[in-house]
Length: 156
Length: 146
Image (cartoon, rainbow over all chains, first blue to last red; front, side, top):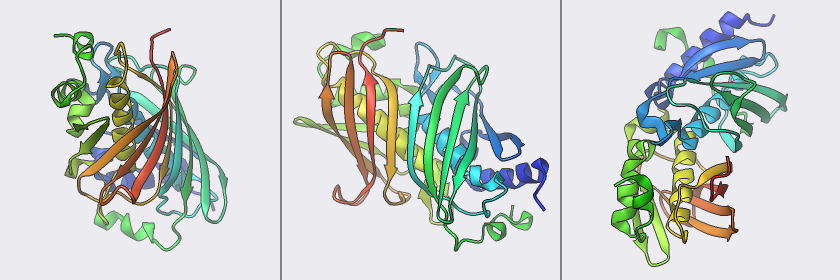
């Protein structure tokens, strides 16, 4: 039986909580809908790349996308819960983000083999129709790690 | 002194580091630059805030990528005849081995500088340049058309 969106979101929250730098940046789970997740990154002055426009630095977007795409397997019905190190990541920077605007990143696994996940995602501020960045990545399934145990509620 | 005035100065350690300190996110990562002739060595100091995997522990892969993008843009800026802030167009990153919780270094190669677009390759390592943790390629827009 497949998990509900709420169960997936809860598991994803525990994963994000396990990652110190995600917490450091203030990332949080916005929503899970079926096989797609959305993370939120609140705007912060110290993450700005261009002090004249207030745009978030592209490198922060890289981190947000790596996090969103790298955890997309956790909410996919056909993928076992696992650690998925990034093999590669490609990011197109489509427009600058506006000053003061929170950023959202959606991600979805569009093909899962037994060893590799192929994932794509989008980052936006006001609307998904005006994306800030688009990302494509490949991630390796590390079958030997028991993520359920690492993220068990007792330990969080 | 505003950013564009700063950019017109000759690239040296002091200018580069002053510049790095003025970009909030570069300051957040604590980036440093050392000019060695034609090459610039960039350093991202060990920082507990950047951990992505607390079990190993390893740096968050995204921060290594972010460091490399910043290194690429500053490497470029130091070589521009009329310096301006390069805008990232796209970024391709290959992770080769996990980055441990220690200092990370990066060096760049300006593969091609056209009139409007530059192609920069970036390599990041922790132990020796022969064992990179990640390699990346970036395109930057040199002048602002938007």
